[in-house]
Image (cartoon, rainbow, N blue to C red; front, side):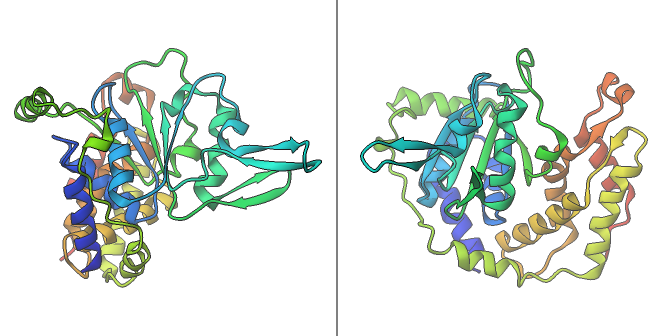
Length: 314
């Protein structure tokens, strides 16, 4: 299958650079093939930026990075009209969103006004400046990073914006053996600051459209649809949840499950695909009750509880 072969080629190139984050790598590739956006959450120094840069190079896509700060303005992201003295007219100066892979670094450190500038481009793949629309080159994907520890001077993303991200991927510590392997690589001269010295082969974007079309041919039994709806509804009825997954969340779970099946070499979705995709697809869509947060409950725990008590379709 085209998706499985394409995804495997991308994965192999990324793993030349990123060690100990295999599941996160697979989830980023899945989101890309699904045409979705991703939140990468983890403490500083766990290769979130390196993962984004390596991924863009592995797929042969144009890459831009925006460092979000409190003084960043919407025009710094989407662009602005600039008066050209020679031509005596205004010319649109395109912002960094006119790219294929956009790294929105520390997206929660800028104001809601600037965060909202990404809403249109993420959903509609276009920007509107002074009433004129400009299309974004396709494919287009936003990789937004967040630090889960520091909250001083941050602006949490509103629910309307987090719901537009297909997945929230947790970047955790790589583990003892993987961290030793990373140290050995750097001891031997490996340096992520010099990407030109890393032999990453670009797979190219030519097969992207073919893979997108293949996704539509992945068969989904009606029992799987009911299973997905049961999970989404379960998040809305759980006593620890104030606001559960939206219908967009259920659609996202369906889309991700189809891509996951294709990446596994199957032409049909099975319950394990849904189970694997549920945490990263739904964790950022749940708003917990205050007492549940005080007790230390996490979205992943609640999603796990819901999945465990729903009968698996046969």
